[in-house]
Image (cartoon, rainbow, N blue to C red; front, side):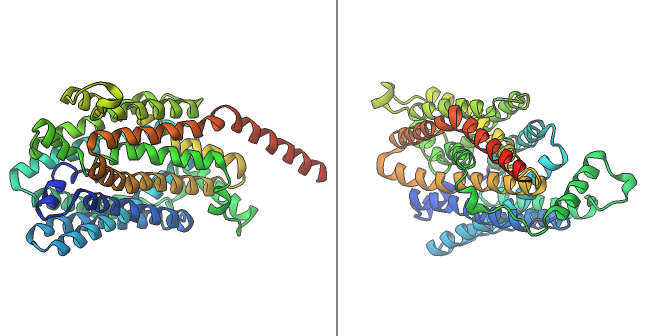
Length: 418
């Protein structure tokens, strides 16, 4: 998912594709991921999870393969439409893997959700760290096509490995762990309680904690993806860092994110306060990404840009990692009879928020950089994040307790009627 940032923008510009259009190409991946995640949240079942995951890995490989083949075409429209379709297919594939993957975590590890998500995010950070580095190394060895063909082959190989070696949860009872037995027992209880009940996305739009958590994580992803179409170009034009080396600098953000997950995995309470802290600091750091002289009184220096970029990787990890357990906790309070549905919907919302950030980040980054330049566009992103922080305050201090009181009163009334 991360290999195209160091060198695709330069390739696209060589085909006369502008920065704002490059942003739209980047956004095609999360567009497919966003739509697919919401659909999958409704259709995932105990029996089809692994099939969906395998198909997802295969589609990601197909998207990468299509990207590599674009090198052999010179037509503006073929490259543009091919890039968009390749990203779209990759996004659908990513969603088909990630949504069932994250849905497993709250169900199989209800007492250690944060720890298991942190482990998953360490692997994610290694991917975002290794992607640009390995992509840049492969680019130096074999040019534009080699990184895409290499990772496409890896994806196809992983799909085959999952088919051959992965075990279904429908194995003999003697082989089941206690957590899996509990998982299946919960599913059976849900079907007995109400087989027709389904958590509605429409009702969740009126749930302020869910909505603000979704927006928070969307902006968190935007803090990283906003720069996908532009940071390699900025490093080249402002600091003369060539595309074959920019991947190493870009990967610093992922490395610091990986470090943050080690600390975040230990957080068991006050999650929303840590999420808020990470978002506020990340928003303030955007003014130093250029840096923007008007707001910081600092002229552009590579040290300022790289330092801000690396710290954002660390602080952005707080809302990123904690969103899924937080949303699952909110849903479980309201729909405690349906923990499996809560896990599926929480995973769908989490992945949709990731897709939202990956969708809007590159588009905003491409257009704002075209209109205002890299430095001012980063400051505008910072203002947007700080506005979101202000909207988060009611939930942070008042709303959660008020909702709990209202729910308690309703439950008392229901108990009296019964």
